Every structure is written in structure tokens, then in C-alpha cells.
Amino acid sequence: MKLPVLIVRSVSVEMLTAVLDACAARWPGHPILVVTNPARGSELRADPRIDEIIAYTMGAVGFSAPIGCPHALESVVVPVANYSGSGYANVMRAARNLHTRSWFIASHARQLRELNERQWTRRWRTELMLEPLARSLGRLWSASIRLD
Amino acid sequence: MLRQVSVCILSCNRREDLRITLRGLASAGSIWREIIVADNASTDGTREMVRDEFPDVLVIDTGGNLGVAGLNQAYRAAAGGWILSLDDDSCPDLDSWAPLCASLAVDTRFAAITCSVRSKPAGCTPASQAALVPYNGFHQAGGLLRRDLINRLGGFDGDLFLWGVELHLTARAMLAGFPMARCDSAVVVHRRTPFNRSSRRHARFYCRNLFLLVLRHGPEAVRRELIDTFLSRVLLYSALHRTTIYIRAVREASRLYRHTRLRAPLRSEQFSAMHPDLRAPFSYLG
Image: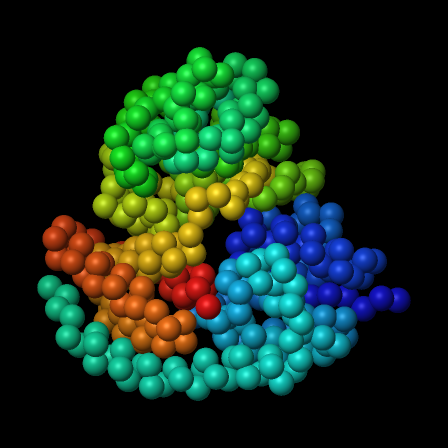
């Protein structure tokens, strides 16, 4: 039995199509699971390439709680609109506890690029580590903007 | 129902993509009320191609690269009760549109319908699926707008150029009391041509327009908090992506806000219902 590949829907349904194609080509015969906001699940239900949709309730800032999945996985794929995945720290952090053999980002929502677990963790930690400093500076900047 | 629909397409220097789109629309026969192309000053012969090969299609020369302000010109010229808004590289997959047409014939509540915009045609639609679901959003590359909404709101905000413009339209539609919906079964195929796309422009305008959304329509109770968070991301990603684009975009948004003096706050639940992804502008560079 081939292990499933889990794709986190971190880009629009429109952009996800190419990711599904890339995953089907890279892992032929592996079931494909997609984690998505339940409100948008119906858009994906008709897609024959998707074997299971896993509902994920977004927090106020998108992917904040850990993603739950009962299966052991062949791979976790986070599609990103840019090359490096910068800006997706919250998604990568939400996926960190999944039981998987490998981690991938889909650069420009097309090109699969493998990261090892250390690289994966470093990506989201670096970004989130800088957040408190940015928040303090952001507040100072914000205070200088008149809203009336 | 499609006889009431005017198709309005925004185009700029994508002649070959537009040709594919117009062939797709024409392949279904004369089912549309009319097809209008708003051409944003293309220099690749787009207008000549349309006039030569698709004489029934009306081309409007908008006089410059105006972004969605060009599309507004097409909306105003359209005569149909509904307007189907498309990009030059998007086209409806009419095989999937029967449930939408049937629903619109009996359900007249909604003034804007967002189709399922994908990069490929869809499979069949589950029979149990409701055709229209209330939804606070719109997709300019694949959505229907009712005539009265256009008349009342005047279309998109012409100052915004492109990207994030649909959120502003959604906010104004909500404030004006127009219910909106989406139809997951009605597919519009958006080929997302690689031509004439720029990540830097995308990041700049998306950042500017989302910050302007917060300034104009952010709920009173959380507006300052939203601004704090947005600006902290601007600083964070300016450092990570080694760019000043985001900072310049915020300055532009502030200038536009001061210039237009438009402040129309949504209620917190309305703002949340739009699901504005305030991280999104920072995901195109890097």
C-alpha cells in the first residue's frame, strides 16, 4: 500500500491544479490528500486526482493551529507563490508535527523542491523569530500614521 | 440565461492569449448578448487582431494601461443584465455551467457570482452540491456582476490598477447591501499565461491595495491592530526579501487614502467574512 501525499492548500484553487499534476507525476499511484478550509472544500471535491479532503479551520491569521492527519505520509507538500517559500512560515509551522518521510515546497506552485527536516524547521523558525522585533517596529511606525 | 450576459474582457499585450479566449467564447455559437474587449493600450496588434478575426466583438481602446479602470469602460458600454468579467487568458468551461444557469433563472438574490477559477477544466459536479453559496468575494478573471451593482458602484475603484481590487469591490458591495455568492460548479479556466506578468508589480500593487483596504474599510475596533500587524509584516519581509517595494507601497496607499478621504468601515464580522489574506502580498518575492 503506497503512503499518501498530503498537499496543504496554501495557494488558490486555481494555482493548485499545477501542483496536483506535479504530485501525480512524482508519486504515481500514491493517494493524494488536500488540507483546506472546509468552506472551500466543495470546489475540490469534483477533482478526480484528490482522494481525500481534510478540513482545516483557519485561525484569524490563516494557518495557526497544527494540521491534524491520522495517516503516515509519503510526503508533505506546501505550494508557495514564490521560489523560496518565504512568507509561508505559519503554514510550515502548522505542518511540522505530521508523520512524513519527506518535505517539499512547490515553488511558484509548480516546481517540487525537497527540503530536509532541518531546512524545513529553519525556514519557519527564522521568519517567526524575527516577528517580535518587526512587531515592535511596526507599532512605532503605525503610531506615526494619522488615521483621521 | 446566457443571452442576458455581456462578456467583458480586460486585455493588455497578450494578443495570442486573447485569440484563444475569443475562439473559446465563439465556439459555443452566438449565445452571449455581446462580447466586449477593453484593450489597455496594447502595442502588439491586439486591437487589429480582434477587428480582423472577430468582427462581432466590440473593442474599446481605453487610451492607456489603466488596469481595472479600463474594464470599467467595458462594463459601462455593456447592455446585458449580467456582466461576465474575464481576463484575456480566462474562458468559461460551459460544459460545467448548467447548474449555475438553472439557479440564476430562479434565484435572484445575488448581485455578484464568483465562478470556480481554475487552470484546467473540472470534472463532473456532484449532484448534491448547491449551485450558489453565499460568499463575500469576487474574482475579476471569472465572475458575474449584475447590472444594478455596476450602476450603483461604478465597477472597480479605478485608482487601484490591479491586484486586490476585488476585495475593495466586495467591501463596497457589502456596504451597499448587495448579497454575493460563489458557484463552485461553474468553472472558468484561467490559463495564467506567463506573458506580461511581474512578481514585483504584483507585490507592489497587492501590498498597496491591501493596506488601503485596511485604512478604508478596516473595522473601527480592530483597525489600529490590523495596521500594526500589516506594517510589522512590511518591515519583516522588506528585510527578508531585501526590497523597499513594500515600504513604498505603504507610502502610496497612505497618500491615496489622504487624497481620496474615503473611510467606510465594515463591521468586524463583515471584514472577517471577506477572508482578506493580509500575508498574501508578501508571498510573491523571495
